Image (cartoon, rainbow, N blue to C red):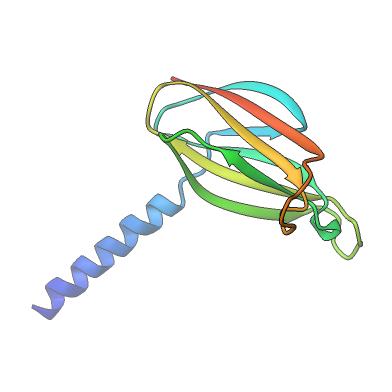
Length: 128
């Protein structure tokens, strides 16, 4: 009985690791303004936005379609050990529904009660 439980735990762990190891198929490097891309249904894709988090500003996803899942959010620092250096905010998504969708990101000091948006990035996505 113990061996069966151990075997099931190992199999479940391998399955979970394989799901987490899936890499995004599409990489979108967006900026303020509008961009249009095509993604595949059921596949991961990434939206990357440049910012300066050490200044108090960051990108925040403000609108997401119901069929989209935000899988993970990362920050990659390009200029380490430099105050005011550039960071890349990475948003990893998955969509299970085909169609045309819009992701809206806003750049502001989101820690404030009423942040003033200084940039907006809109990514129009056609999921096939």
